[in-house]
Length: 82
Image (cartoon, rainbow, N blue to C red):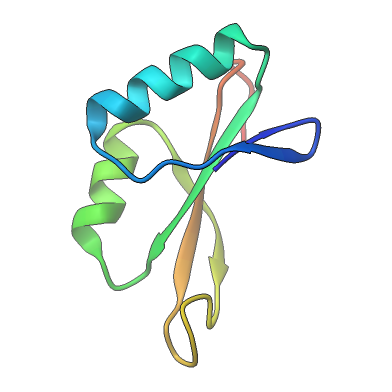
């Protein structure tokens, strides 16, 4: 999920090149932060996102339903700390 001025402006499910291109376009449009959520029990997804730069910023308990938690992962697009 990508936010601009506190509003969600994009939502993407996809692979590495798509994510990199989305971030490039968002930077060009002045977006300063991107975040995504992924299942806490999915180490492949967590690792994929971490290789692109996002870091875990919050655990979302019950995000996918009772007992099904997620991690919110964020990345600053302007060089600041998320």
